Length: 343
Image 1 (cartoon, rainbow, N blue to C red):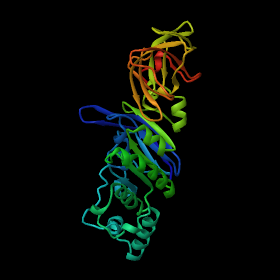
Image 2: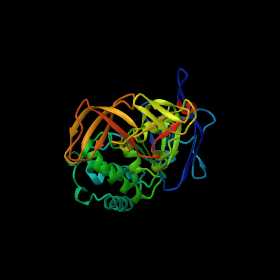
Image 3: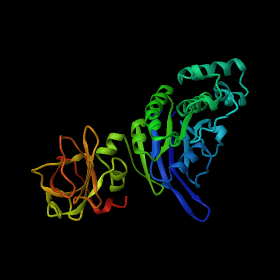
Image 4: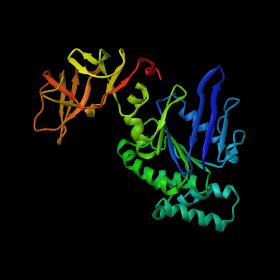
């Protein structure tokens, strides 16, 4: 099912604007991530879509061709997965999944058929009769997804579903979540502050800042063509080079780099595009070196306001305190006019 938001905003008591008027179109079966730092409005937007918050007057929410702006959570028929999963510890996997169907007073035969369907889809057959407390974090996540999907919701909403897991498990389950969501074939929206998670799972990512959607696009489009310094920093960890463009070049303490752009523009670069190069046009100072087996992690100062950590492949690395020549991958520098810096 499609989702269309038109002029959806939210102001809390005390004239606190949490969400500026937002327009958003999501296609049927599309997975979209709301990505941004804490306080950017992403959770507020998700709660408005769910019906847990009421938008300011004038905002319109459409599921398919239906205006659901004034409908309750139950009437909207959305599926929700929360950070805590909110599973019932005293119930088995099967009973957790079937709980919502039982509340809908569906016939027992239909409940059993749907529960069996999602148990198979989520590969939970070996755990169907186990209590929730006997499951791992990854298994609990699959139960939460199965329970949300069993009532056949119109849209599936996920609020930071991986944030409660440790880093190693989160990385493993990120890929599993992407596969599961696509196997459901359902329109899904999930909130996250983790750029890797958003880029790995979503078809499109909406980067949010100060209650606005700063930019929306495919992960590749956001990475390769960010619309503002904020998006460049948040998607791909780009850092500003320590200077501004003037007269067709970027001037740094360690040298000048020919670069097109309006005078006063800033230039950003990602660490993976910076290399140690004996013939490079810039210079920097080695601040730290760490050997990581297949490569070295080098912390470099001199070209960005803060030290830049880059990876160096080779049999040896420079020493701390050494001045080195630096090259940047051609075409990898991102330039932004002064007007985009607050976008």
